[in-house]
Each structure stands twice: as C-alpha cells, then as structure tokens.
Amino acid sequence: MLTKEIRSRIEEELQIDLDQRTASGRHLRRRDHVYARALYYGICREVTNLSLDEIGKTLDQNHATVLHSIKNVFSNLEFWSEKFYVRTYNKVLSEVDPIKQALKDEKAKNKSYLQLLGQNALLQSMLDKANDEVENSGEYREKYIKANVRLQHLKGLILKKQSISAAKNFIAELELIKE
Image (cartoon, rainbow, N blue to C red; front, side):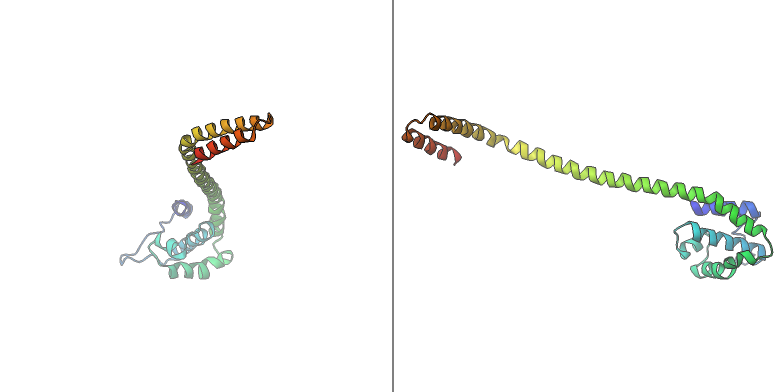
C-alpha cells in the first residue's frame, strides 16, 4: 500500500510513468526516468521495511537493479544538477512520513489487541478449568458437610469433657465416612 502511494506521488510530481517501457519491453533509460526510479527505490528503502527484491518486484525489476540504483544514482541525489528531484524527494518523503507513522501506530494497536486476545483466552481457559473443578467438587461437598458437622459435634463433646469412649466411637464413624 505504501509503495503504491510513493509511486503515485513521484509519478504525479515528475509527470513520469515509472513503468514506461521501450518497444523491446525494457524500462526507459532516459535520465529523467532513471532518476525517477532511483527516487522511488530510495524512498521505498527508507520508508518501508521491504527487501530490495520486494521493492524491485513493484516495478518488475530484480534486487540487483534496485541496489545499483540506490548506490550509484540515489546516493548522489544532492549532486544532481536538476534540483527539482531533490525538492520532489523532500516533498514526497514529507507526504509519506505521516502515512508511515499512521501505519506504525495501527500496527502497534493491532499487536496490543492480539496480545490482549491471547491474555483473554488464557484467562478464559483458567476460568473454565476452575468452573470444572467446582462442578466436580459438588459430589464431595455433601461428604465434606457431613464430616464437618460431625467434627463440630466432636469438638463439642471434647469441650464438654464427656466420656472419651464416646469421642472414640465418633472418630471411628468419621473414619468410615472418609472411606
């Protein structure tokens, strides 16, 4: 998307079709076309995270062509006698930079959203597991309540200092319930 925007801005500013070809199917080698493509490659390299090969494919070129253009043509931009290329470079870069920043912000938002979705899924699975444990513990709840009631009764017997034999009998009953 960003490469299309860069391309359209350069073509609009310089009134050149970057993909214009000769009758034999090759890109035009006129200086204005070479410089325009160099601007395009250079700005794409600075603004996007695309590889040289990916940038080249946007104009049906290979990575070596893009690299040559960036190293030998674009790197000498400030020495070009035609200063409108420098102005075009600055103008297109200033127009595209807010778009790049908006895309970066959108990407950060998407990353945060995906992280939140992952955390939500983890919490949901933990909640489901806890709910399953609570449901499964229902059958043990009755035994726990009965044992707890009898335990409270035993505490009462001990507090009242009743006979030890009655307490032993009660403990034996508790052992049977546990099993």
